[in-house]
Image (cartoon, rainbow, N blue to C red):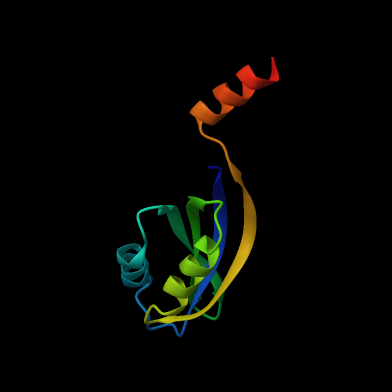
Length: 102
């Protein structure tokens, strides 16, 4: 099954929200087939920062909705938006694809 790389912008409810705690809460709610690869805090405006996070997940029905629900239900999160979505190829996937193309 193909894996997807999803880059997400997670907006907090205010400047007093601890973004690291938000990320930890999101991580705890993830299923075993959805993984937070990395994240960083980026400035938005007037002292407010947002989380730019990269998730990998299966290209299967319901996975994106499951991730979105998990993020939106986390305390301190006001909005979630997708910035990028693409197929995620591992080294193994690339080798298999290369062999199939021969």
